[in-house]
Amino acid sequence: MEIKSPQFKKNAKAALADEQLQKALSHVRSKFIEKRATAVRELDCFNELRDNAVAIKKHTIKHLDLYLERFEEKVLEQGGQVHWAATARDARGQVLDICRKIAAKTVTKGKSMISEEIGLNEFLEVNDVTPIETDLGEYIIQLRGEHPSHIIAPAVHLNMDQIREDFREHHTELPEDRSLEEPISLLQEARGILREKFLGADVGITGANFLIAETGTSVIVTNEGNGDLTQTLPRIHIVLASIEKVVPTLEDTSQILRVLARSATGQEMSVYTTLSSGPKRGDDPDGPDEFHVVLLDNGRSSMLGTEFEDMLRCIRCGACMNHCPVYHAVGGHAYGWVYPGPMGSVLSPSLAGIENTGHLPNASTFCGRCESVCPMRIPLPKMMRHWREREFELHLSPASQRRNLKLWAWFAKRPKYYRLFSRLSHLALKMLAGKSGRISFLPLAGGWTRFRDMPGPEPKTFMQAWQDRSTRDQPQ
Image (cartoon, rainbow, N blue to C red; front, top):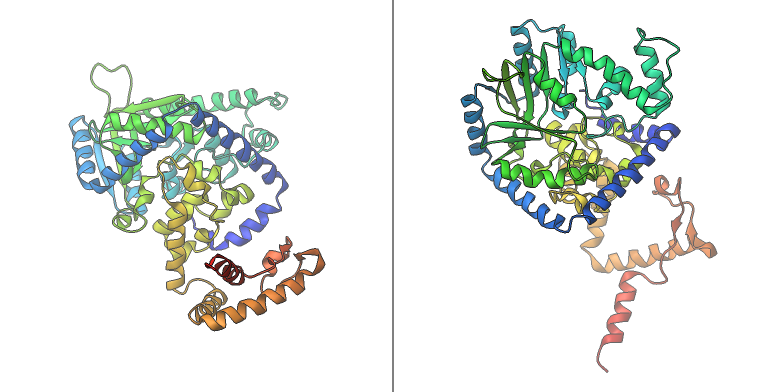
């Protein structure tokens, strides 16, 4: 997928002016937040479970090589195959080689952010293999030629009228006079179309929420039955997963599952939690003849031992973006790449380079809501600040920003001049605020005052108030 994040400001401006998008995003602000809060309140030990989940992932990442080797060993024992992919190009090539081995023409896919990351659909299409998204949200946006705007609700930016129009445009084999007024009618129509695709697919591709080192098992968590059909009906099942998805044991997985659904959709558990271990055995009634796992690095190993290592704990619940005021305002497509919201503002620079994603760590109010709701307690604001520092050090931030910071640093190192400048600035701001106490225009801050007033200054500067308090508190 092409990285468009250098256009974040342009994308954000367009998103803010899109009335339909703004209406759709209001559902993120209400439904996800309220459901999560209810689910957390109903589980007294939620924070203890979070702590356990964090400890499990920290331990795993510290010994990632050992658990990956153990996972591979167990997959091989059960008749599966493991393919190591250092880059997105490697992963795409490995998937295509598997498809070509049986002359596959169609591939059904469960929801997979990794397949989005490596641009798999586009790659398969140009190589004469047709990918079919089977998650309802993913299917809808595939019809539209779009990419997900949310990692767990890919079509959250759309309304029913748009979906209805898309179905009428693409499902031309169905009667034109059919009713599509109710949500259930849209669901039934998609189910009927996709059932034929499931039965005719040569290969099924799923992502993985977890990879269990103890048993060589892949785990997917869904609210639709498409994941099960994708991995059991075709001749070949391919699991696409990044290396940090591995966990030591089934017991560890069950611990993390208890915080995953509650954080993502406010459910105690997702409707389906499916475990797959190798191809079908001789007495199995169904299942694939071949089981392949493609393990993708694509820059993740370079995060180990750095200030961004904590990001590898992410379990892709989406809670950070569900609570992010910036995401609420502009949606996922404005971020310009696969991973939106606060987690994307940290992960995307790690995978695609800060030179390509520089606006993303700056797309934050640093309110801290993302960190407070993250089930893995990932310090997202702290890591965004680290990326801002990297951007500054590499001279990628705007020249005016660097110049102004250097000017501030000059004053900060000279207290006498700093205090003088503070007093003069305070007087100027008081004059601009006037009797209203609001500033409607401020030189060098037009980006702020163009859309909102700025409150006038307090009666005294911080230094003046501190001096007054210190004098007052001195013993007489």
